[in-house]
Each structure stands twice: as C-alpha cells, then as structure tokens.
Length: 460
Image (cartoon, rainbow, N blue to C red; front, side, top):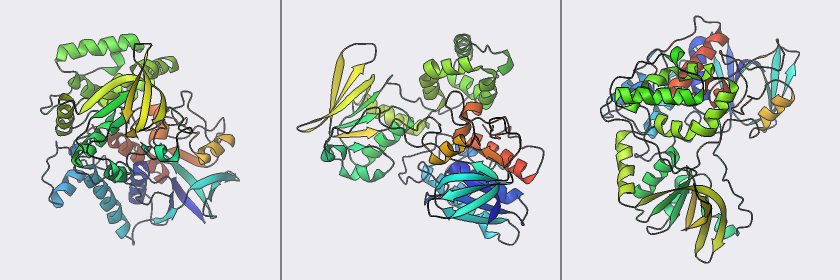
C-alpha cells in the first residue's frame, strides 16, 4: 500500500506530528507510523512513574498544540491534579495526557484520516520513480509513502570508556540505561554509587535513589562538574532583547549577555527573553561561530537554559549540602575491577594527576547523544542514496527553514521532512515540547496544503 504520509519514529516528535496530521488531513488520506517502541509517543522521559520526576517547563507551556496553550492545564484539572499553570507537573502525567490526546483523536473514526501503527523498525528504503519511497521493515514487510516525516530522535550517549576487559559480573554493576528503573531495586542502602554526567538525568536518578531509601553517598563525575540551575519560585518578566542588535562573534555575544544580566539583576530574565528567539539567533551565526559555541559555551548554556523546577532543585541542593551528593570535575580514563567493586580513574580538571573513585554501581547519566546519522541504519542508507545530507557540524541532517530535508542537489522526488532532534543543525533549540509542537504543526500544514504556517507567540 502507498500511504500519503509515513511517519518514521515513535517518540514525542512522532506523536505531535501524527496528532496534527489527523487534524489537518482530509478523511480520504492515509498515514502509517513506523516505530518499535511499545509506549508510542511517551518515550523514555514520559514513561517514568516516579512522582519526583517532574517536567522542566511549567504546565502552561506544555500543550501539544500551539494554538491551544491551555490544553494540558485543562487536562490536569479534569483529572483532579491540584496544579496551576505555573506548576511543574509530573512526567508521568504528561505522558498520560499525550496518550489521551492521541486516543481522543483516533476515536473519531468517521471524519478522520486512516492511521495505521506498524510496530517495526525501518531498516532500508528505495525511491520508486520519484513518486514514492518504499521502506523495508525488520518484520519482513514493505510499505511506501508519497511524503515522509523523519521523527527519529537520539539514544542514550555511550560511556566514554571501553568495558570489554571487565568480567560479566562486573559489567552488571554498570547501568548503561538508567531509565530502566529496575536497577534501583538492586542497590543497597549503603552501597557506593558513582554517576557519570551531571545534567538533568543525573538529578532525576539522584532523587530516584533517595526515594528508594538510599542512604549512601553519590559521587557525580563530569568534565566540568556543573549541575543545572533551578527555575525561580517567583519569576520576573522576561527581559526585552533585540536579537538583531546582538553581536554574532561568540566572545562578544557572551559579553553582551553578561552585561544585560547585570542590568536586569537576574540572569534568568535574560535567558527567558532570549528563549523564544534562540532559533533566530542560532541562524545568524556562521558555521565557525556555531562550532565555537559547541566547543566552549555549550556546558554553561545547558545549566542556565535547561533548568529544573524549584521543588526539585531544592531537594537536590539539600542532598549536596548534606554531603550525600559530591560533584567532581574531570575526564574519565578507565573503569577497572577491584576485589570489592569498581574503580574509576579520572584526570581532574585543571590538573595532570589521576584520581580515583570507588563504587559498587556506575550509572551512565551522560544524557542523550548528539543528533547524528551513524546510530541509525535507515539514515545511513538514506545518506548513501543521497536522499538526505548530513549537517556540517554533525547536528543531525540538513534541512531548510521549513524542515524540508536537503537532498544533495536533487530538486524533485518524494517530499521528506524531519521533526525534532534531527533538525538541530538548522534550529538548535528543537528538543523541548514548546519547540517541537510548533515545528510539527508547520510540517503538518505543509503536507496538508494548509496556510498560513502556524505562529505561536505564546509558546515560551
């Protein structure tokens, strides 16, 4: 069967795209969704059931639809959640809201387009007479599409050292995917735990350990030892920032933002003012300045931009203050086996000597890998066939300002779009719900022939 649109992926980007396509495509259309994740649309982040795992964006900004900003808040109210628009809801509740939204759209069988969910992984593809793209699935099936939306996100980043020399028993003490929370039940109350990475995932796992009765010390090792900041309990108005007036050389740009922070008295106001214009600012930077940002400024951007809710931040800070969490800055050199556990050797930041940390458990919280092509057999095949092009900085694939995939000089053929992390090279800020929902709507409107493109002035 040839579908009008095939959506490849099963995470949030895919569900946002599908929901918008259901709303906009005529009933005569047919959509196929290819993905092998049983929790379609919820992804890793929104499947967690631990109440301490909270969204990092207030509920008022988390609607699936940019033109209905109150949808999630209304869902919370309808389900007796005692939260206001400015509160930070649980990730599990958000996953349920996403599931319910899709289910509601699918129930309207008489007036909606056909939607087929295919539990499989696309392993290859072939363009057919420039009119459709056939996908080969790992279950042996084959389907074709007139238009394609790539919603392949990114996976967990790999550990920076090889574990091949460790015994099988020792390797079971290395948690490669912390979101499989079954590992928490194996940790003793007084065990030694070392977490690699100091971002948002680390905070989630520290709080999860605490909730499961862990009483020991958690050593956190990352290259710079920087942890995310928290949102303000009493946020101010966002600063007014003229993006066009900002310098585009990275050193001058950072100096300008620091000066603005001193004027406003709270750097959060500057970040909040910059937030809705980040994509426009990124697109003003040339390749060399983007590369300089990734080399030097990215860690500081992350801890200021990707903040946690006030309640979560306070819980984490209390653990740091009490010595239950200790942050270390350094470069991991190796993990070796000892008589009573594991030993991590690392070169301390700013020093030449090698230090060590002993642990019963090592947990990989280095976050998500940077968007790329190598992790996906399908994307590698599409690159070989020149159906896609790699972003010059390895930030996913090359797309234009309307999320259309750049095709190595080919002007005609199957219409291919991408939504989400794969488009980071063009948009940079494209992993959070407020960004993805706008992009998903715009792509759906193009595929449905609708106009004008959606604009979400309230998205942030």
